[in-house]
Length: 373
Length: 245
Picture 1 (cartoon, rainbow over the protein chains, first blue to last red):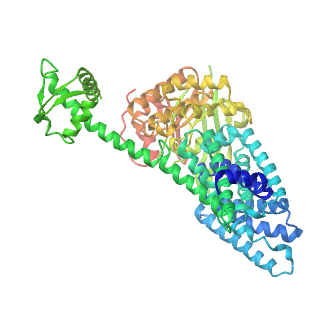
Picture 2 (cartoon, each protein chain N blue to C red; picture 1 turned 90 degrees about the horizontal axis):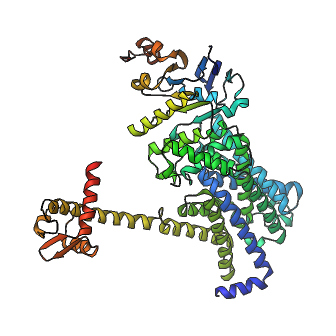
Picture 3 (spheres, one colour; picture 1 turned 60 degrees about the vertical axis):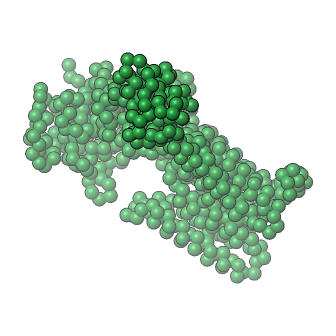
């Protein structure tokens, strides 16, 4: 199926359109908040929170008997947030480090959620079927009311982001300084953590408890590679998230019996991979090329400085000198001389070389730089 | 004329978990002095500053900035944290970090505008970092990062400056640049409290000194109290430090 066919399908298929809209919105919110999770070094917190949300979903269902998105959403947020409180409580009140606290909360909450899940499955209530789709996510169950909820919650999140942009930024960079400036950092911190919890919970139905942290972190980690500005990073991460959502949905819609959540996550991870290799400045590829180029330039510069010293010892700098006097320098080769000639630094024929005026000028400058520092 | 007291600390006790870090500290910082806080590792130097700045909560004690609580006179105070306390790989520029110094006076929600940007550029110029304003902060040297932090405090336009080891890990050029700025601030009537590690430079850089080792050992003008006796009391071993003036 080509891209055009897909858009045609999107135009006619109401369900596909709903799901695409939902996954795209989830991607945007995840990218936005994921950026802060990554910068606050709370990557693992996302994983713990998504697992901690599971019992909340089941309890909300048990209490109300409803599978209404708002009910389940509320349950998930409450228990996800409770999980994050437990983690900070454990780290601040005991000698345990945060990785231990995360591990404890993750497994205890998740285990409890699983327990409740098996409990209600034994009850003769047909309605409970489908709650276990929160484990691995099932985008196909996204309905219009889910998407509405995502839209509203996403807009509220965006609003908070815009309002408290400056506060979130300074809190993430330097929390103690923020406090010295009179901001209530406990309040700010809970607000930002709540928004992260909300972002995670929004994605649970689509991506599932187990894979959710990848959805939160990948767009942000990828975006960080392309920019050194926080605002650009957040926008890019949102775009990457949306793209992962849309592309993942498209791929799984085109291939029968492939579930959407894992595909979305794979697309997101693919974006990370591409970003880590190809991003300018921070990307591996360009860094390697740059290093390689620097080394090459350094070798040429070394030869040039020696040539300058030799040439300036002679009354006429354009007097030709023998190639043999260069053979003792490390990194010297005929190839290097040809490169220098093509750069217009020297003229070179077989056994002799002489500096061009430009080469003399450059050599002079390098020589001075080397000897003034 | 009796000098005003910029910072007054009464009966301050701070503890992390069970162990007291600061024990019953009384301290008066007169207006317009450049004061070093010296003491061994774990003496509570940074904690003292953080307690004054309301960052750590004391077990007991009272802090007054120009006679009022920190909360009321917060805008009179600027802070330079230890350079190592933040992650310099944060995606932002030098100018942006300096602008953070204006956030406190702006208060919640309000964004910095032209006025704040202009003040930040001036502060960057003062510390000699104007040309690096758009540089990603991880690409700055340690000394340059320290100057950015100093500029961020300058833009707060405060009366009292608290600095946590501003000379740590900077080269000689930066150290001279920073101390000149501190001395200039003192000349213009500001008060400066600086956690300092290098005992050799205390007489040269500072006019007041506080010796601290959980308890306050001594505080006063450098020429009166910076001597072997107080150093020995603070550090527990006999320091041979000659005092020039």
